[in-house]
Image 1 (tube, chains in turn purple, yellow):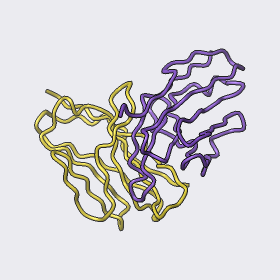
Image 2: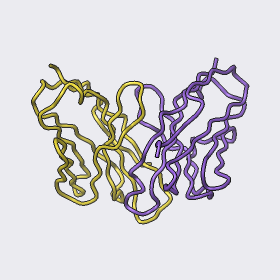
Image 3: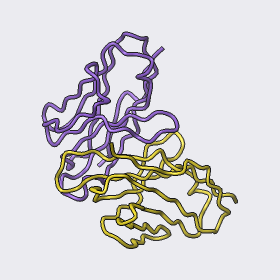
Image 4: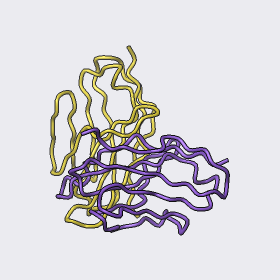
Amino acid sequence: DTGVSQNPRHKITKRGQNVTFRCDPISEHNRLYWYRQTLGQGPEFLTYFQNEAQLEKSRLLSDRFSAERPKGSFSTLEIQRTEQGDSAMYLCASSFGGQPRTGELFFGEGSRLTVL
Amino acid sequence: QKEVEQNSGPLSVPEGAIASLNCTYSDRGSQSFFWYRQYSGKSPELIMSIYSNGDKEDGRFTAQLNKASQYVSLLIRDSQPSDSATYLCAVSIAGGGADGLTFGKGTHLIIQP
């Protein structure tokens, strides 16, 4: 098992463009999370999936953000009409579905977004 | 609003000494507690989880939980320069609720050779 994989690792885009990030979780994990982290801050929860169902979305996730996990395997996070405030590291993590281990997250290396 | 508070540091500890990292949380419903280590430019890595009051030891690491005081700590014995990193405290509400972890801002730990 190669762990959680994210791509692209780095994305530089101009304000107003759309970007999409992909996450491939650890295969036996049924929960998948997206977090955002800026410099000097801890990761902020965005959304999570159990299998293909999106069970919770943070109020941080504006209408410009959408996430999918169509077959309960990989997930995508799309940001439309990017703004400079979207510049951050976007972290994907996966975990087992059984309590209390759902908080034992395995993170990918992240996708760093820079909006010019 | 769930909050997790940590002293941002930097916390400087001489090599071989015990590093003590502290965390408080606001939500009394929190049931699960985690410490993640994050090296500069890297993603967080789970190092300890604790679910009940008391101490839990794993090698050089000891996590301590006091739910009455809403306090969780991490002790690192025989600190090594490779322990220099940011340590993130995270809490969640268990019981199958739809909830992601809430992270603190992290404590930057520096182990001085």
